[in-house]
Image: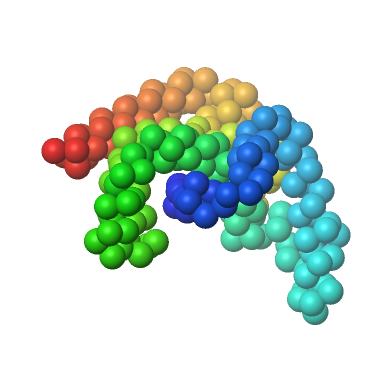
Length: 208
């Protein structure tokens, strides 16, 4: 998700001159849509007789049981989450790119750098702080993922899309095992804190 966000931001910032505002708004709109609403829409699109399987049938491809098999269900969750958050991260990357001095790119051009070399040696190093921030937030969001798997697959099939957030919910409000659910919540808090601390340390080393 972060890789696609970075590439999209770079394309819009350096490559697209016309309709730039349109593309920025288009990619950010999914963030404004309520999670329940878009989850139900994706549920309709990816059901057995949904739009996606109909399109696949036009190419002679058998219908994919998106909601009934573990791997397709995981792919579906990845698609939904990426659809919502890629645009959000892209806007953050784009804002950071706009603060990169144009002199850096002009100097790279004089040195004979092509577009890819400018991206690797100029753009990416300048984005280290925002890459660190989005990595931390994406890690926390992934560990707490709940709405999408709850509405689309309810953690199934065979617990194939069971996330920590959904597992805690089931333990607390389905099995009524509040103590166990609270313990897992505290453990997740410690894991998130440890990962955040580690990512910050790595970011400090890279800045040095």
